[in-house]
Length: 176
Image (cartoon, rainbow, N blue to C red; front, side, top):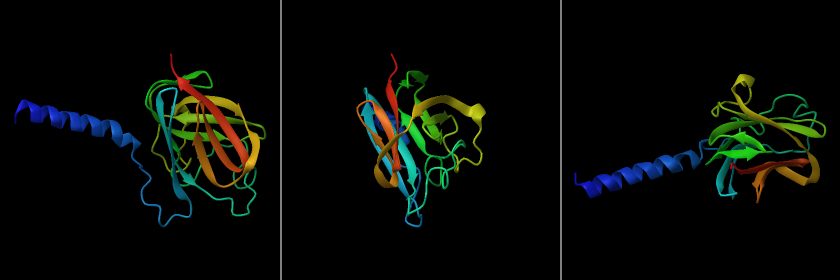
């Protein structure tokens, strides 16, 4: 092989390695009740990708019934929700290194714990291990307009979980 072809091959492999974490890993959702969700955006120059299952309210009481308060929750349906950040960041002014994490929460009446766990590939929270937490932050929840299917939004400086009549935002910024 000539050096130009080797260089092109290596560049292609590098590009694939950088892009592959952004590819959806939740698989086909055609037979799932909760469809897959994908939120992708840029905050402070950092690419942020969230992959999650989108359960629906379906007339049920969500907070405190379907999703218990004070207990670890997979923050979605099926596989644990994952969040990928392309660079070191701060979440609510606390350091989180570049990488992919499972994103758990502990819902509360007015305050939620947002949990970034180092074991990204998990089914639900059945094998959740707090010893693997990379970061845990507390944030206030707020009443919001009704949203039928769980949704994550990425805006200028925060990630917002929205479901039923609740919003749970947390700030994110590039580490300095």
